[in-house]
Amino acid sequence: MSEIVNDKKSNNSKVENDSNKKAKAKIVNSTTKNNKSEHNPLKTQPSTKFTLCVPSSCISKSVCGNLEQVTHVAYQIAKAACLYNVGEIVVLQIPKEETKQEESTTQLPVDPSAIRSVTETGAIKKTFDDTVIVDKDGDSKMDEEESKPTKKTDESEPDYRSDSLLLASLLQFFVTPPYLLKSTFKDKDLLKKFQYAKKLPKISTLPFMQNNSGDFKEGLTIDKKPPKREKTKSGKVKKIKHKLNVTKFVNVGEAKLLELATPVPVNVRVTVNIKTKQIVSPLQAYGVTGAKASFGYQVRISKNFISMFTEASYSEGYSKSLYVNSGDFFFNGTSKLNHKLDTLKEINTVDSKKDVLVLLVVSKWRDLCLAFDHDKSSLEGVTGAEQMFDGKLGIPSGTRIEDGSLIALAQLSK
Image 1 (cartoon, rainbow, N blue to C red):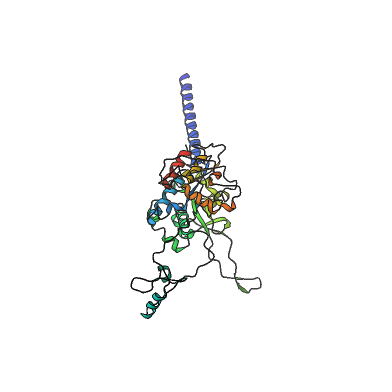
Image 2 (cartoon, rainbow, N blue to C red):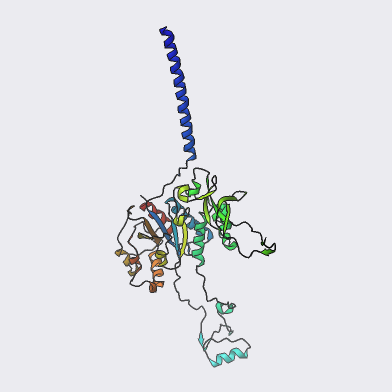
């Protein structure tokens, strides 16, 4: 009897163990499914956000000989910014220095006999303010500028010069998905400037390149071609004069446009959840976000010295500004111009609690002083560019702008 009872107990215990195992297996399977559905970004938002400022002179003719070299400079800056989660890149437009051009031709004072000799031979004579330019053969000579047809000059100069606009466009190109290039850059002449940039590999540290799930994609909200005519309540057909300001369609690089659940403004860069068809923040999708809730970094052009500080993409402004001397291959610390740098204290680290937004200006000191002098009238009480910085960061001298940016960001991100 006891053996039978023991056999029954053992059988019951086996059944209970099997049922417990099955129940545990169900729980494990359900939790693993839930974990798979949860999105865990690879990156985390750093406590200190950096804004990197570089001068437009870093792609000048004295530094870069052609478009290919210009592209590589912008590419190195973009890679450094993406590697250290820079939220904003500022391109400071450096004004051109005024240089006196020497005249190549020799101007001789007017001599009546010389004029008669020229006119008697039938040659053409040209005078400029009581002077005549005569070559060795006795013929009048014109400068190259005079020989060219005069062009009508427009009084309203463009806001941005070609060098600063090119650098900013290249920096924006490197954080733009390939399927959004034509929508983002509509200028055909500007697209031709990307011939070398298209051949370079995509930056691997971009947030959407490291996405650990296929649920999120970058897109641009576009307006489908609306009907040109519509019927009124009376039954008449009239033309539509206004364009739609909102849309539900997003270009995410697929064959068909993605239709959202709710309408959004037209021509806006967005991060979309493909499964839920909803717009999400880059912080939720990738773990990091740039200025103005953008992925990667935001690019802006600073037309003058003061706008570098006042037109920040962050509403709260910068908590600290640091200067990094770079791009000066023949730096002379004993000169009067560079002597002012000694007044700036050395700062090699940042406080993650206090220094929330740091403006890092990587430039040649001469270029900054030149930009300051052109904007001096709007800076009351400020006598020098050094007064606008909290300190300077020391890096090896003689470095290029793109190398100095990487070294400075690496040093401050420790």
